[in-house]
Length: 348
Ligand code: ATP
Ligand code: MG
Ligand code: FE
Image (cartoon, rainbow, N blue to C red):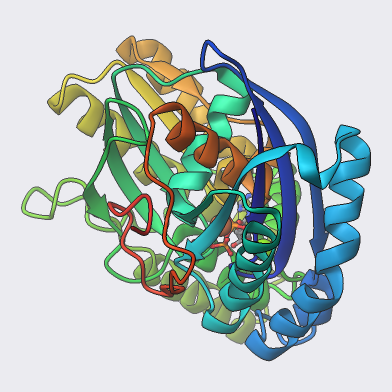
């Protein structure tokens, strides 16, 4: 059975095609993405109207590419999965409208699914099915959460912690801006940090005090602390050691994320940690997580960078898990839900 996945929640138009085997196995046949990120770069963040228009323009050509790559016809598709939320209202609407049109015209079942659960599903394309219980650290441009996944993604996702202010990716983007690095900030900071010393500057680790919420995150204080540090150095006429600032900021983020994830895994007696979302592409985060998971005897799964950032393949994967679990399709008049909570895997 072939599952088509459609993603348009932010600035990537993604179409993915996944083959669901009779044994529940997933085979990735196509993963085509068109990004409008360059159109947003000069604004330092995604401009919703620009993103919606770009989705509209990219929709048909990107779907064509996906079908060509997979060497399949639209008529061979078994089911269509589309991101119904969370995300930008106008951007979501483009993908959901297209999905409804294709589902109605072709007479195929439609699944309106959760983008965040999709980020976790991306990992199953690379590492196979999830164990009965696992912990997911979802770190992206708009979210930072610790999730307990039980009985597979189609069954139950419980949020056990989240950021109380900025998302990890948002912190990367804001710090990049104040260091005059391009948007999005994750990749350039990751690269620059490799030439710096992560112990050079002791930036604060948010919410790690004894009385703080055990599994919640805070990154806005860290961002402010980096800003203050740079301002002070500038006032003193010092040259800013950009690589050390980047490395020390990155160390603070990776330290808190991995420490809390491992603590939660131990407390909840979970043997597997999945890290996903755009920030999972970060080299220091995956490196430090690998060290600490090995010490703690926890299995670590991090998908390749291409599967970490937004794409349609992850939505197709989540759709395939729902089809495999025998889930009912969503109604054809399903509405987009910009604030969809992570626990709602599918719109019914
Ligand atoms: P959400 O999934 O919460 O709706 P989003 O879809 O915009 O948000 P993603 O595409 O999953 O987010 O991730 C984008 C974020 O990932 C950006 O903030 C970007 O800076 C960050 N990012 C990408 N690569 C890296 C990297 N190597 N290191 C750190 N951050 C990275
Ligand atoms: Mg993006
Ligand atoms: Fe995302």
